[in-house]
Length: 338
Image (cartoon, rainbow, N blue to C red):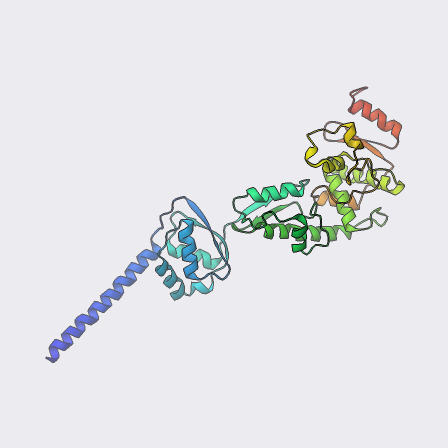
């Protein structure tokens, strides 16, 4: 009788051992078995504070089929659940559940980028955010004023307040997060640039320098001329002369601008028309980059009051109206020697 009980106990123990061994082998196989994805790469986002169960559900919803209970136990028994970092990731065809978990624990995030181009208006920046497939849309139809208030800005008009640059982000980052970064970078660059201003600058605040920089940005893409054009506008401000710069007129026209300015457009008053109003316009007219900002606060010292495009991306400068009219005849009206 004792032998029989001992025998059956050994059989039971052996069965348990085999079951555990089989389960362990099955678990190991599942952990390292490549996951079949519908595409070569699948993006997904791990939210802050997400549990292994929530992550498994996110993976399945994104098209990465994992066994939820297995993923949960794998994360907890390995204690990798304590290291998982929120952010945007990619599942790559051939990944196993274990490789995915390791990637999450390392914080090996996939990255995306968006570029706000120098000279873009805020409308163009918002449009770029709306069409980017990896940006999470949260702002909807929020007004410009509400957005600036949300950012804690003293300035309520958004134009020029978001620094033009390339921003790296993880898929699923919100439009607000990216705009906040661009706003903070703009404030940082403006503060640093303003600290290097010329002592006799005819602008009293960093915001006025930002307005000037935006005009310079739209007036020329020829780097060596930025400081010289800034000098023309500085000279005009000092003597109370109208700036008379076409990009401000275009900005004031808004959607009415159809590619060219007519004489009546120059004569139609708007807050941004520097042909009809003295001094700087009330706001920037575009996003200004570092070079334009530097030119605005350190304009070239000269006697020029006028400039006209040569038609090749560069400008011809003059110190009086007679010279300017001659240059207009030569380069704009096609008269005289070229």
